[in-house]
Image (cartoon, helix red, strand yellow):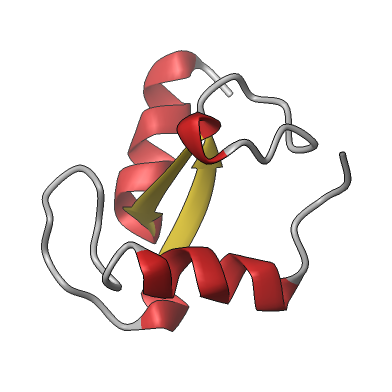
Length: 66
């Protein structure tokens, strides 16, 4: 698999209702990010992807020591 393009990223976020998978709060598309659960940016299986706010995504990686 390949890395997500900006268009694919936006499509995934729109399909998820432009909201965080963690809090289910709606946000602007440009404030949401895609997190790969297995940390492999090439694994774009929908089950491996989470939509998070930038803050949630940063906190997740900080806790993991990234």
